[in-house]
Length: 378
Image 1 (cartoon, rainbow, N blue to C red):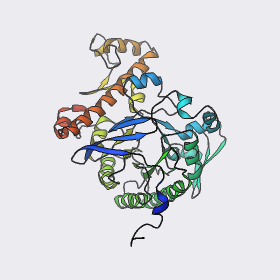
Image 2 (cartoon, helix red, strand yellow):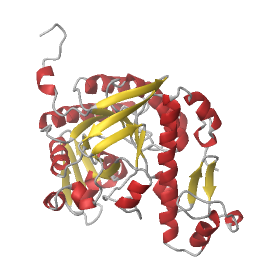
Image 3 (cartoon, rainbow, N blue to C red):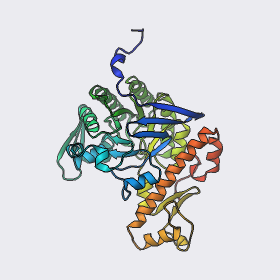
Image 4 (cartoon, rainbow, N blue to C red):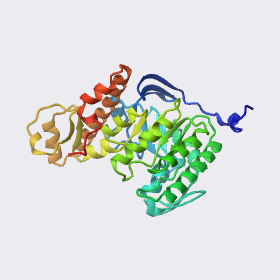
């Protein structure tokens, strides 16, 4: 063995998730991620189907708006209907009716979002689940097993997501645990179908982030995510974390920014070399009547849209969608979600085309919703 080589190297390689970088413009890049259920062209946005479905949107509608990969949440599926049920019904693809690639989160975010119901120790996380309070235990090994049993194309390691603000010592403990859990996940991983991604924690502390990148990179996982952002920190801190962390991640592996965000935040991260994104904003904001268009946000409930015939990406006019929201019609939220998902997916495709043509800087400058200096929503 060569001097300085990792003594575990001979046992590290299991599932390889083919990832080809096709074009670059600065740090930004386009690529192709090959999964057992299809090719994902990056940069790509993953609609969030927490329980297996994006709220109000059928699998066929997801396909029609151009979705290539969907995110589902392992914690929620483990609570209801249960991993045994999903496995017995043929796995997550058969259960949900979505035939394309699926990435499953590990439940680590619930350590943050359900902190009042969770107790973390070095071995794993104990929950009183949010539905009926029954006890539930997640460990790195059980999370990997669950994701493999239900047939996720990409599975995330269990991680500890500290809140913001958190003292350095608290964040350092979370980084240590997350790295140790990634090592245990790597050992538990069968490598037969589900590709495993590591998650970089570290809060707003650059040295902790970079140490996590170094230690996780040594595990030679299929891809790497930036976690622990969009948890309440200021936009300036979130963007700085991305600027520090993304370029340090392994160049040849897909890079995933978890839970972010607005079109401007996505554009910022793409410029830093990030490939994959997820966020609930297109569906959540859509259900509340907030739509995205090239010029920015549009609040469709406002009276100004009552007589506006301008067509939306969901196939109806602004006036009609305004009418549905004002009448409390449930279809309003569905159509608004479809509009937002269409916008996001078109936005990602346009970003990729701008990168491929070497015109990313000019394209960003000409797209108001993508401008990196754009202020908070109006």
